[in-house]
Image (cartoon, rainbow, N blue to C red; front, side, top):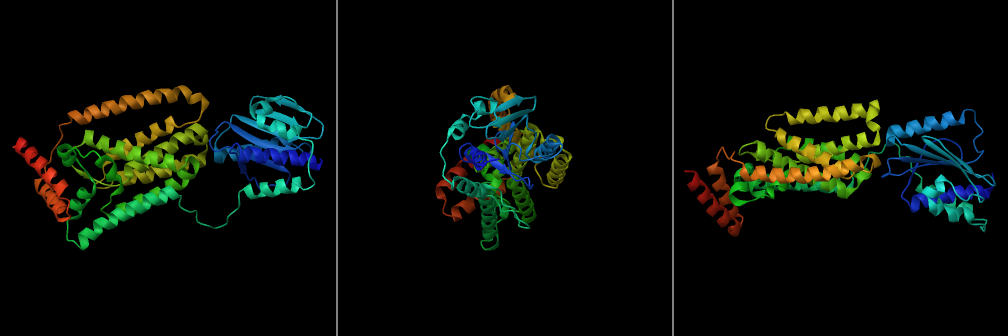
Length: 409
């Protein structure tokens, strides 16, 4: 093969990576070939090589074996573009799961160019400098994944921010408990814990969300942060920080809503609803990508479920918050799925989500499970609010509590 042909392959790879968002899969083998995968496209896998660069027996079996190994990690693909570059030859053959394509400067039309029209100018470009191939290869080398040995993965940024917020809130509760002498339960209620009486009396629906970032027990905090680290390490690089935060928020709110509808008055804190939402979203992705079929993935998910089920049945844990969070994460994942065959399902998810939200708001509005009552705790929180200079809040809360308990009596 000529240097010009190798340049065509390298420039094609660069265009797909830099303009279309594809990533190099390092298969760690010798030879002039490039495997590409798109983080968001669960259908296609690309293999670029020089026509004739591999004169090995059973070439198709070798490519199929690499494909299977890649799909075990990234999920099953419905189509492989096996693209080879040549000086003169131009042809393609479309089979059920593989498009065999040979590209050269003579190529006019084929299934690969229909899918990636931005490659046409690369094939038609005749002039080149002696250093073009070297420059292109250097750019490609920078984009290749680097092998890092024995290095602990760094915590993704959004995951790190959530961990810092939870640690800070735990520190504030501890500070007021140890230095101020306040009851940690009262402090957590004042800071935003889920507490049904205040939601009913003072319409503090923001507690559905803020409760997720408050912890009062060190073991509970450590277990949740460890789970968040592991889930975030998988979730955030694959789906981005925005979807991570959205999934966490939806999980915490839906978990609190489930808890409100199914339980009486209780105190609830912790990120568990959001963590179960991440777990639900990961399960949907594994099904969407086809990875759920592979035993290592099944064992990994089973391990996550066992750990989280163990946490769910510890004393004092609000199981319904976990259930609500899990279903919330499933709905978010289905809404953001990219599988073409799930297009109709995505539309139904939008409708079902709207109906579910309306139904839950209705159930919250008519809920009558207000007991047990903790009047002493309620007025201690009011006094603590006065101590902190929050007179505007304490006045309104006290007035509403007085009217609430007078109505009950």
